[in-house]
Image 1: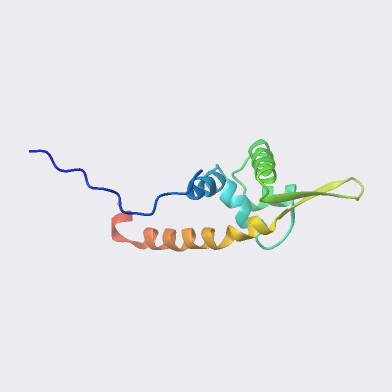
Image 2: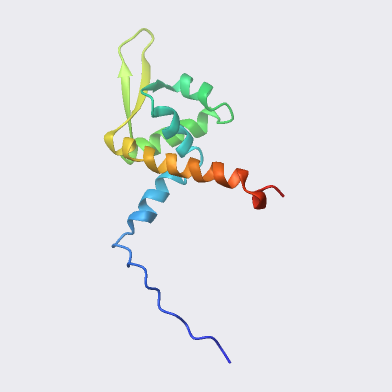
Length: 118
């Protein structure tokens, strides 16, 4: 005897699911780290490289371009000699901070749970 398929009673996702849209931003490799390190204020490319040692220059550059294209990060060219570029979170990018804080809080709980220590 087969089991009856139950209806999903959760609220239907809006068209072009907002959850999928948000996750596509923070699910990119190193994207959450970049956003995390920009939360305190603008950073130059070299500063971000120091903040996130394992990331390569190529991947950091790609991630910053993607985040800029999605409206999460702004890129400002500083009129210095030599010119430098500063990256900062937009107001939309700032709105991602509470979500990252929540993910980090759950991560700490998972790290401390007996089932995660295998």
